[in-house]
Image 1: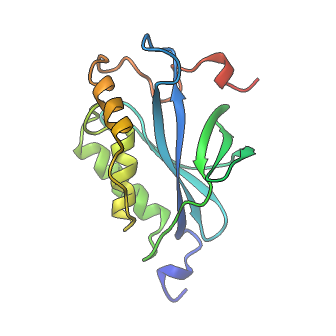
Image 2: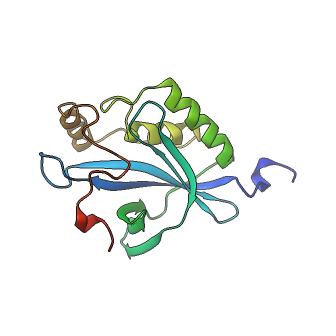
Length: 172
């Protein structure tokens, strides 16, 4: 192999994924959990997501099923849950490997304690995209309103690993 661009574990595209966090007193599907799917040169997908807790994160190879395709996103099933996934994502250049991303993410979650307002799953996936050299748009007014809502939820009340999920969001 001459360079990282030939590495089969090189990340070629990223896709933001989101799923509803339900079971909260605020109402159904108001809050979401997000992460990244990364497509490797070899054709495999890995998920990168920050979970609640000081140093909980996930970086592992996954498979998913596409349920519906829309103009700009797809509905997928992953971990028996429904997620939305960007349809096209963003190309990664210069190349980074999934192992480099995992190392960055491990350091990130150890350095920054989980905070539902300032260092949550959404901020983490944006920071990983910036580390990959990708452009991250400014949050919308709706996203900022969601951050304000989250500030009223006691720390630890939401389990981003799948604990607060309505039965209809789980696949049978």
